Structure formats: structure tokens, C-alpha cells
Image (tube, rainbow, N blue to C red; front, side, top):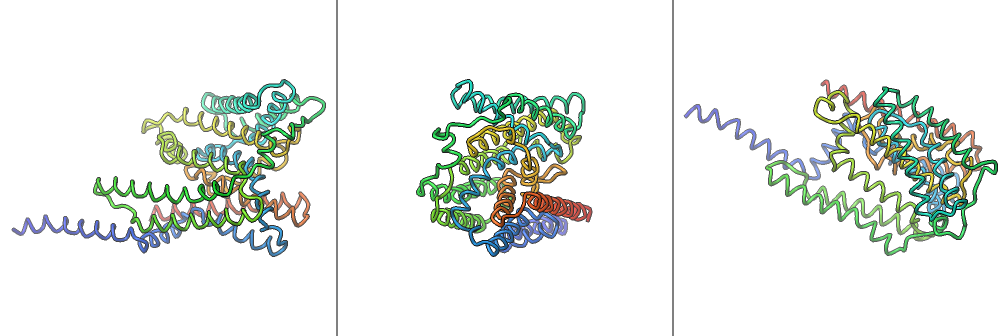
Length: 418
């Protein structure tokens, strides 16, 4: 009898613990776990949101035009091209690697688009496909150099930066620029086309509905496996807050021109790549290799193949960003991809929450980070400040983001040892 009581006591304790876990998964438990994550250094997107609020407050105080609906619409147009480049660099940063040639790759893609479309007369879809194919080929070269010769990605992509820039200058020839037909659908896509309001509102509600649906499915699956799950009250609260924010943004932009199709396509790519990161074997392998490549190899992951595909994705998105930039500027020129494109793309990914040390980040990092970068650039332009100050301020913001990432990483490591 005593032995039976001793045996049942741990079971009773486990039952009580399980009940406590399930109970804590409500809104109160979610808030407590959120607080614990922040204390442990997992800041998530808090720095980005706080940064956006501070930037908006400062620039709107200095120049009320900053928060005008039409200015925000123009900002979204400008953010799409750099955002796509930043989206690609996220996948390389997740591995702890780097690609310094993304700006030059976008410039070469812009040049290829102009030459194939305007000079050679190829259809626009063929020209776009050719530009993206060039990006994929460069990604294959970087991955091969990294895997076959263990060449540091810093060196390989730095060499690629110079080579791609030379190819861009050679393709464009002595004129140095090619004007794209202003009346074409592609240029209008980059400068004029706006989503209908009803469609924008529908898209604003869709993420919240999907969040509730996936939350309900996950809850059922975990319940069937006798595992604790997040309370539906928490899922619904998150969905309502997200939907309210998106609906307000659409309504406010609708007071001006509205939401650009160009930005909507960029967000669609973010959603697709976020799914690839979180829901596919390849995406999970990226995190594993970035966290510990040797451990990932021992667990059966093909580390070389993961690296290769990451570089291909990165260069392909850089090329697509160059296509978007050409569409926005209605030209392919020697200046495309130069200047602060590299800095802005990498800074956007890091500011958005992707770690330079690998193993942590998300596709949404590119979206949030590019909004911060574009807000800074737009605000400084409205204040008529020089490019030199814009470079210095953007560089300072990047340095702060890296410092925050380093401190958060150190905090997580200390909590892990504790």
C-alpha cells in the first residue's frame, strides 16, 4: 500500500504540473512567458517597433510632412526594392555567412533587364527571368567556392562585388544608362499602380484570420498528443491586435494614394519565405547549420547543400531587387546598386532582428528593418540634410543594432549557463 502511494505521488505531481502549464498558457501565462523571454535576452521585434515609434515621433515633430499619407506611400514604393535584397541576405546571415556583393548583383540585374528588354527586344518576363537567373548563377559560384575550397564568404563575395560591378559597366557600355519605356506596365508598377481599397482591407484582415485558423489547428494537434498548447484567447488577442494595426494602416494610407502593388508583392515574398523557414525541412536546416554546423552535420543534415541553396536564394533576391529598382527609377544605369544599397540591405536585416552570428532571424526581419532604414532615409531627405549625414546616421543605427544583438546573445548565453 505504501509503495502504491509512493508510486502515485509523482504521477499526481505531474498531473498538477501539467494542469498548471495548461492554465499558464492563457493571457496571463503568455504575458509572464513573454516577460521571461525579454529578461533572458530574447527581445524579438521590440527594438524595431520602439525604433519605428521613436523615428516617427522625431521626424514628424521636425517636419509634419513625414507622416502624411502620400509620403508614407512613396516610402513604401522605395522600400520594396531594398526590402527584397534584405530578404535574401537574411538566409545567408542565418548561416553566419555574409554576401557583400548584393548591391552589385542588383545593379547587374538592372543592367541585364535594360539591355535584354530595350536593346535586344526580349519580352519583359524573359528579361526578368534572365536577370534572376544571373543572380542564381552567382549564388551557385559563391556556394561552390565556400564548399569546395572553404573560401570565406567575405572574401568570395568581395571579389564578386568587383567582378559584378565591372560586368555592369561593360554591359551598359559607354552611354552608362538605358531608359525604360515610361508608359510600360513595369514602370507603372514601380511608380503608379496602387491596390484597390477593398483588396487592401481584405489583405489586412487575412493575416489575423490565418493566425486564428492555424492556432486552432495547432491546438487540436497538440491536444491529441496530450501536449500543452497556447490558449485560444491568446491567439485571438494577437490576431485582433494585428488586424487592428493593419486595418488602421490601410485606412490611413487610403487617405492619400493607398498601398502600392510593388510593396504588396514584396510582402507576399516575405510571407512565402517565412513559411519556408518555419514550416519546411530546408528552413529548419538553415537554423540548425547556423546554430552549430558540426552538430547539424552529425545529425544528418547536408551542410554543403544548405549553404549552396542559401547563397542562391540570396543572390536571386538581390537580382529581383535590382529589377524592382529599375522599375522604380525607370532606368538601368551605372549608379544602380552602388552607394548605400549594400549597407541598407544588410542593416535592414540586422536591425529587423537577424543575428550576424547565425542561427537566429526571420523573413519578417527584412520587412521591419527596411521600414526603419527607409524611414530614416526619408526623414533626413525631408530635412534637406546632406548624404554624408545620412550615411553616418544609418551607420550609427546599424552599429546600435549589432550592439543590441551582441548584448542579447550574451544575456541568452548567461541564462543558458544558469
